[in-house]
Length: 92
Image (cartoon, rainbow, N blue to C red; front, side, top):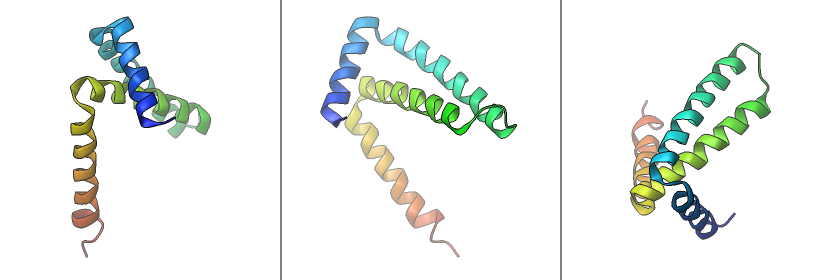
């Protein structure tokens, strides 16, 4: 899905259910991801279950980013990836 289509969908979801409800949903999805990671580590869920929960969390996090300012969010990701590349991966 194109970025502008995702952002439009996030806007629709936030307008329909409200920002507070979407923040609450983010809590729930984060909890489900934590559970899926633990279950995957113990062999109690498969890779697809973990990917599904990761996708749910990513969507909710992007909705939160949209509410806070998506461009600032993208800039912060870029800044942190540059830092990872320069400081973490290239240290001897």
